[in-house]
Length: 448
Image (cartoon, rainbow, N blue to C red):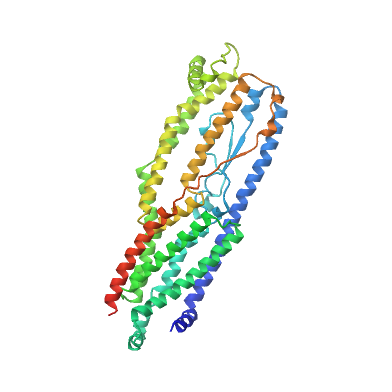
């Protein structure tokens, strides 16, 4: 019986079409991920090369004044992308992964991004996570919606019941064949992604595999639940497609709008305005008042006294510092709201597997919004280290050629791999368990 069902399954044009669609789009998604990673890696290589050229050029141009030199110098802080980011690009196609910062006020520099075609951003990337979350469910629906209703409508279902076979077991057998087929395709695509994207077989890749299979199991259970209701093929198709539309398309948009409105980040605008205003108004403010605030922030520099006449780099960099200091409250509020957004999104996602799967994959690949905020926060620490290094050199007015500029290389951000995969899959497994129990109870009742 099992062999006959397999032969029958593979004779279907739907199966051939599903296989073609998944393999073609899967290959395209992996290719998109590869192009994305290549683009980012080339940018990092250019950054390393350009920083060295930039330092050499500026040092040669401003040999006599280290304060003026450091007004122009930029230093790079890089967020390297793991190969697995090619599977789940997340928000890393929008947010910059390289920060080129001066020791001037920072907040105006942190949010500079690359120039990207807005039409491309609007359409988004066909990455592998998109294929799993959006397209795999549609194929599962196409393969399963009529596995019972079609036989009932053609009159062949009575033959199954007459032959003495358990109708319920027969249905489970047909469903298992389709699950095996989808599982093989997913495994092939994951293996192809590993090879093409050079993903190491590590914890992160295993987590992606696990969340992917749990997710497709969820959609098989949803299909199974609808099938055992014993509706017509049209009704099954409508119910399943509506479920897909609600869970995969409508609810994520609704949740995003809700979270955005609940925690609106007005501070992003006010912070930018305030840091610029606080800097510019220092030109007309008493220099001693500016210096006193600077000394309160850095008491170790109180030994450097402001000269009474003429231009002073001590005052100028103190003025730059005020732009960041006076906007620190808005920056803290913005970070707090973004963290609340992430926490609320994770809470809501527990009840909706597509959202949970997407957030989990982005977190595993370090391409989530929270990862970007961690990168920007670490950029602040990087910028502070530069200031603490160069402020004494500027205030002491040391000679430019006394500094070994070759030691200043781009620094790299180290992301924390703190994704708890159990917390990600347990809510989905609970939903699978509940739906399975309900489906089996309905199935046993309807197939008596």
